[in-house]
Length: 212
Image (cartoon, rainbow, N blue to C red; front, side, top):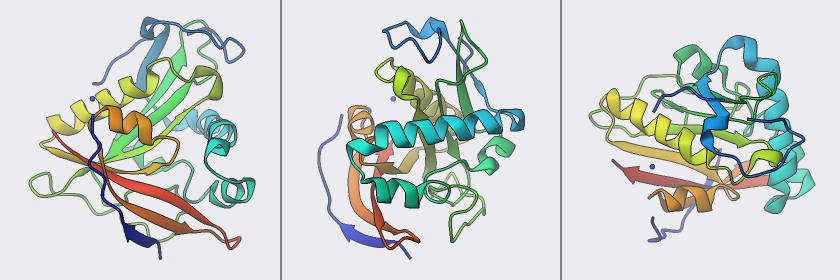
């Protein structure tokens, strides 16, 4: 079971769409018009898996050790295909090279708060928008496409879609590297959670919440 330590923080600072960029070999500032934001499909799974691996290994090392990264990939950090089946997961393609994926991320109307298909303790029961917070899920950006505004755009798409289904609150289990983005968009840190890994390590994440 995850180990939770309450550590409240008061620091706080938000669609569905279509658009398309260059290639993973070009790390340059481009506008969001150079990207296509669309719902992911099951045909995307191989590319999503490769993207997630590159993102976790390339960006995760800023906050996690190699042992934590290896232990978390495929369980706590990985693809949840239920999000694809539910039509709540976005893939982002560069316009100039749609064969690659620059980023992905989504939201969920189900109770599982984070993790891949293979995480322990999944709960796919539906949430009640009148009393529950929609889950913001599984944001990953390729290292060559960071700081382009992609994560902010996916987050706005997720919040808009969840709000359209009646949700007025959002929550997530944020990796340590993702906290600055979510703070900027008004999410507040509620507690730190230590996720146990099979290799004896643990993966710290932070539960963050926001009201619409």
